[in-house]
Length: 254
Image (cartoon, rainbow, N blue to C red; front, top):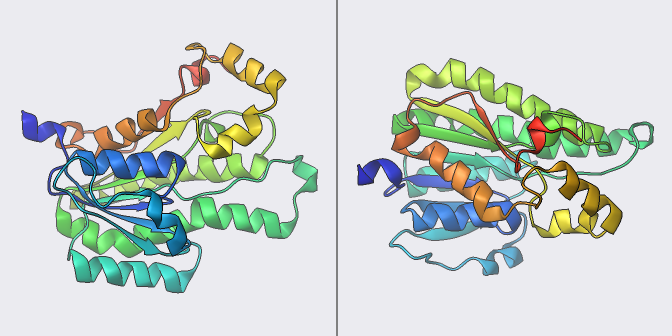
């Protein structure tokens, strides 16, 4: 029973793993026994994460821009040399630019889609052989409630997150015979530095809280817990689904 509810011995890659939700996922996975390789665009950002996190599991970092093909290949080589297989891939890296739909430039559109969608698909494709070798492989895509319903501004972000959810379904169906499960997590506003920039507007924050049945924003650890559960043996018959970590927002609307 105990072995069904931990990640002991699992090998995990987490993108965008140095702050906010990504950092919480790295710490959660490590505390549950997984060895974690996290990815950040600059080595300087990796100092926030301790080498250990309450268990015997190891944490290490790699400077990598997941939007860059050469960097993705370098990440693959690092994992192949280190572990020979991969049990968990968490696609968490992403970005947003909030503005009116008519105001987006082509460059902004491409930057958001590359960071939020294309990089995730390419990493899934690259790591597919190593995940298949695990025979208990897991992919968790960090999407957003913006991929499930309209949240005012940020149409390109919403498009990218909605496409990520649909990608999750397709990969889950295609790769299930190889023992690879693919799921997604869709957070609402979570107490991270990025969300804090928006919630500084008191009137907007008040409206967010009013429209959230639990009457609060979420914590990064609450998203990390959902991601961890999806990768546990206890979740072995769950694939192709999206869990909203949103305090009930998605059933209430904006």
